[in-house]
Image: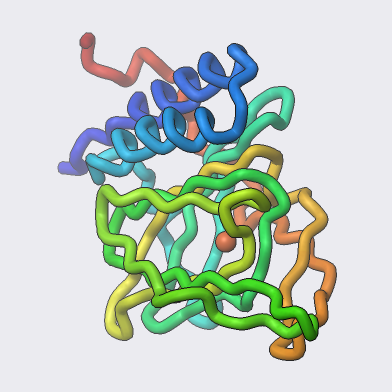
Length: 201
Ligand SMILES: [Fe+2]
């Protein structure tokens, strides 16, 4: 028998985040309170439907799990096959990355005076339950890779926009930018609204 998926965790998260954003907070408060909400969401690995944790054999995939009706935020699952990594890229909006399963390494970059990019500090390793932040104000350029060469890792990301539609950039080693709009890998979203399937709280 299939274990019961606790999809209400995702519904609770998007509701709480919308309530937070209704208050019009500054970005540091969004990162702090939103980060605490995301840590709660990724603190349990019993809610993500299997089709949104399915890797692609050749490259990482990004599934949209929920988009705010006013596109103030979006929630995605990032699925890494063994050894897969992103190019160096930016986001242009605030973002929170919560590790659900496995582990990933995020290497930050800064732009040098000559325009090239330099790695900033050591890579940050995310393990289940941990949350990392990105944004143009706290550091927006990074490269992320699956920390494992032999298994799939999954992280849950939240961004301050409909991230799949944001015009942003990937970076070449000489620091030059290539325009990038990520889109999403899925056509349909998880149904978080069928309360009849849930056990009473
Ligand atoms: Fe990123």
